[in-house]
Length: 395
Image 1 (tube, one colour):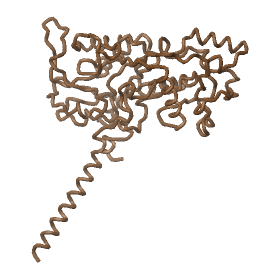
Image 2 (cartoon, helix red, strand yellow):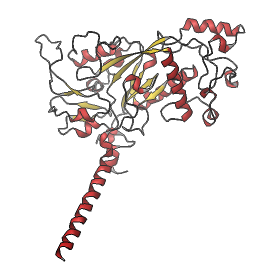
Image 3 (spheres, helix red, strand yellow):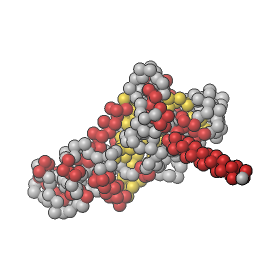
Image 4 (tube, helix red, strand yellow):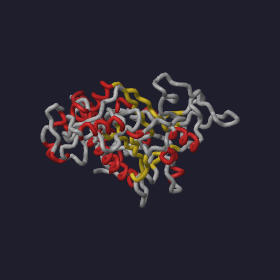
């Protein structure tokens, strides 16, 4: 793989390719939305540590109970609140089950047996006649361990334990649980499907392996850190805004004077300058974890070497699938996607669009080699046509 191609697309070690010698392990986040309670402690910690101005008056946005709206120049962490009906929950589970059946690279239970993925999965067409798999010992799934989301987002532990007792006393597993289908391994589930749930997710800069914002910056204000993250230098940015359009996630933004300063003199810093999460570069430089991860009370936000985060995310998805939460899936863990994978990996409980995330993000600059090749061929064609016309005109 050529140096230029490796810089713009495909699998790579971003810190080494940026020229860092003996760089430490690439760092990243793992955000597990199944245990997020929407407390917004991460938002507050991010603002306090980075001295970010307030966004507006903090009134409710009109979109659910959110009062910050979205990521922006002064909101580097944002907790989304998504309300879902029973029908949407059923659709999410069916969607996740279909992904597992298709063998998509970023989802699936690591504990699933080869036979379960090689042959048509019984989970793809739940039937009341489906029997528990031998490996399960005839015990229905959906209880025994605390499911996630833990509160207000899924079956309550009390209901599950009640139905567990009913099944142990001879009740039919499917009728006891309302006939909720099976897990990805074909194990019948028990536990009521909730009429309503919240999906809460703390979003942040993805720190892409191939970052469009970094590629198009003309001043060097954005740089790749030794931890593999992407950082903005306030004092170098000229506010051109090229990075804003190049980010496929809509993360980076220039700060406007509409922000409300928390300083006594009312001064809003860095107006007109591009801003986004730095993954607390200053804290990482002193062997500390980012403020949001340190503050999260439910460990929904984890921080560490990216490879460890991806492994933890895969294990968590497998655990949820075994419990019957087939809607669990990974986002950002595929190193072969359009941005080469992201430093911030997410476990989602529905399709990415539900959370406002692009389903297939692509770094615009990844097509540059192909574009240059096409432009070169077009130029050669024009030169050839001009030469033919010149020779023909002399006859």
